[in-house]
Length: 124
Image (cartoon, rainbow, N blue to C red; front, side, top):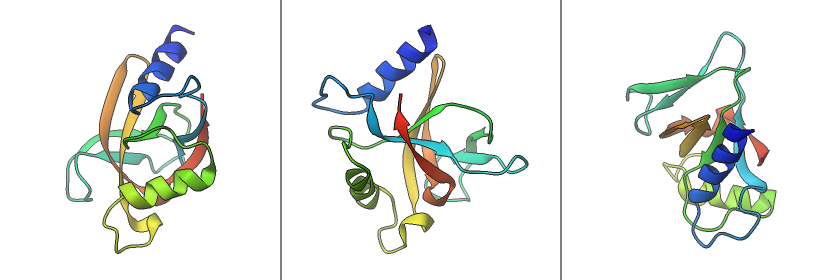
């Protein structure tokens, strides 16, 4: 329970002008990868940058888009935020690199992942 409360507080700290329910609703993700192909979180928005960590299909870190502003209330708002935040903007959304923060227990890792390997998930 201690880790869940800490993680929820950290997710809320990503956003400015927080409403009371900042850690509920849309704005979080889970890795959409196979058991033998973990998702690499990279230092920069390129496959040529070093991997900081990997997310396995059965792990459960909280993944949040590193964007400013209040958390999205709807899935449509979450998609709008992705289009505004993930790069490069000339590519389809699935081919873009998105800045994310991973919250797993007491650790926070900030990096980039390919959007196609993330599924929307409601924040805890």
